[in-house]
Length: 448
Ligand code: GBH
Image (cartoon, rainbow, N blue to C red; front, side, top):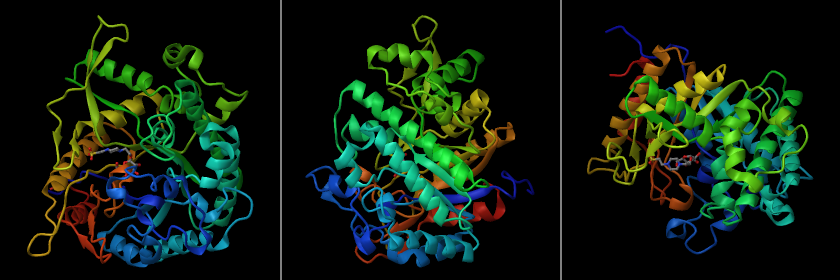
């Protein structure tokens, strides 16, 4: 009964992103981001919802930090809205916008929490989209590095942990190729590949300037590669999962961790392969202090010696149970995802930088929110994470997505991911059953 599933110094946290929670979309001199623009397109976001108010964390951050302290969280991962700090993307820094993040860091420290800050969680300044076509241009990466240098300098002494980028897929393909995220474009494959590369280059430049400006800071990425779970745990299927993980994610995580595109990616893209500048990969592949993985689910996979790629992915997987709003259930993804990444690239530390699920939560007659699916989900995913740690995978922290319900990009406010329920009419926050479960876990470091 005295066993612990997690070490006492495990880093328990929760995550959000600026556009999804802040509101105050144009306050204190903030410039428009591509999401403020994209949301105006009819149907771009479910119910034509907007981020103008959202959870209003910009005004309610003290209340939210107090709730985090009550829950026993050690870390709050949030992103900065680039266009709050540089309304035009570059040029003159907006002190009022910068001040918000300083106050948030101070509030966290005063309540015993550490900030872990993401520089880019998809809300590019609209000005850079208009001037350069956003990530279509390498110029944008230089502006990113200037923003990182300036903001990190301003935060000196206030924050020691940074993510350059959150998810390259959401930053590139989803906005420039699939059209489902801002800026809503559907470019060619060749242009897509260049956009991808420019974002990796921005990460590399950002990492370099962070090393210069804050030599003591710990830096990583928060990436959601496609994860694979071997269909059964025999050596050939485990090997297939590993091979697929490396190749399917060749253009993002593998390129960063290995400092180059794997042959399989270059061969598949042929003439569409991106133009790579001299020295780009020296920056892109520079060592990081931790690898953040956003793990939600993983596809089952089998070894298939009869196929050219030698594996087969099961897309139609009846073992994946869904919540009432398409929240997928595949707990083994945490074990296999972190283990495979660790075996392939031996990162110093792995942080589960996001994990969580969405349900149609609502208060019951007694006012409580009984999010039974999320409790079941957490129990199972935490078992999977503790198994990884027992097997020696260096998972050092876990950040739940999300602390509170928020604007789920194109799905609007319908999909609720929070440990706290948000009443968007009144702004009220109500702890769900899962919040109470998670608090107990943090206190005891034990899954009950
Ligand atoms: C992340 O990735 C983002 O970083 C974050 O901003 C976003 O809000 C979060 O995930 C949730 O989506 O409901 O269990 O089926 C975006 C990619 C796509 C991953 C939807 C999770 C659904 C998980 N996400 N997916 S589940």
